[in-house]
Image (tube, rainbow, N blue to C red):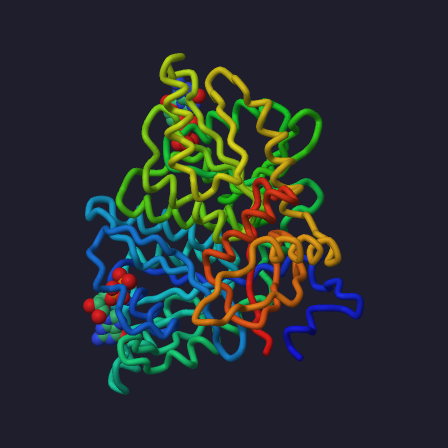
Length: 454
Ligand code: GDP
Ligand code: GDP
């Protein structure tokens, strides 16, 4: 039986220790209007076109789980941003550079009906420099007559142009076959990731003080390492000694580099945040305490939770708070963060260094939870008592019984409950709350899934 294959004879689980290898990342890159979004929709099999989004509107998602010919990968969609017309060429190149750096292989999309432009040539130079595998997509070849346009793209020096009509689906299968050949089985990011010290992503919207905090805590005790060895100089991991213990701060180039405040930059900041979170084991979400929590702050927190990473929330600029405002603020914060009340919170000032020493204990606490495993015996004893005292509510004369539970994995903790019927969301939340109270999962998201047994 498939579900029970998770369990060994004594009910202990098996697949927990090694975190799953990160999926390889395929980025779709090209200048505006060549058809990137159309192609992404085609690959994802989406009907409603993202191309109908208003230009300049930032979309939340920047990467999507995708599959082709039985292989899973992460598709990075760079089609959602619109650049200012002035300086367009430099912007496209700059943004493409980020996407290229964060990917394992690139599909470079060119409009075959237009032919190579100066902007295309610039991106080609970046692609060459990166050393990443590239698959050239000659888009808008809607029929056989367009094939000769595609042939002209040999001149880009990127090898064979794949004639495609993203709009009608023509040639996309061949393009994806080529992309799968170019894509490594496991993300390069994982391969070059330094092991040993734990990996922290310092994230948050612009101007909350990430760069100030990094400078404050890192001081001069740090080692800077290009994570993408010998290729592009973009994402950089820094080994930072905090009280003598080394930690990797991932993608600090994204923190240190001042990103242009264009519409597209927002989108790329979001892409970058997501990549940093995925690369890390734990994220510190930095929030500006001197202004109300914004939707963007909450979105970053959700990104961390959705990625299943350990979480610490740090309220910065506490030096700007009046003594008499602080108690009010505390209450406001608790309300704002009710969804993640399990996350340790520290109030700090990156400017003065106040309480920044509290960061490490918070990181350690969250990671301990993230790594934690509850033995099956203890888990079932706990659930047995819980269910006896608070049975699942009766619905239509029926009452699902919980048969057995096990922790299927750590990092983050995932629990599987076997029951005789579906458990209501409210009851699952109740179980989660009690699990947290009993076993202390501060700072980690936990997942509970239910398998129904007859
Ligand atoms: P992006 O800015 O690169 O994401 O480009 P879009 O996907 O938004 O496409 C720009 C325009 O080109 C839209 O009007 C699309 O409908 C059109 N387009 C995209 N792919 C094709 C194609 O294969 N053939 C034709 N004829 N038009 C296409
Ligand atoms: P980033 O964009 O998140 O990296 O933010 P920065 O570190 O560049 O900081 C943005 C602005 O906030 C700068 O002017 C900093 O001097 C200021 N800032 C950062 N941390 C603090 C703090 O703890 N207190 C005060 N008063 N200002 C801060």
